[in-house]
Image (cartoon, rainbow, N blue to C red; front, top):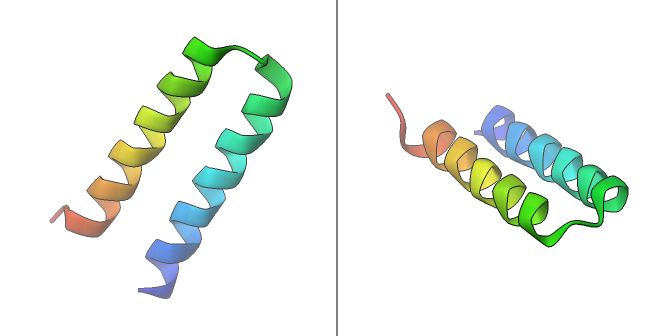
Length: 46
């Protein structure tokens, strides 16, 4: 469980870093959707 939380936190940090670089709302929404998908896949995937 700690590995999953760590992975999610890592991807959230990457997303926040990319938001600082891009300043684009569309890119932010794409990054958020990607992070949600990865988090869901890590938590609920087989």
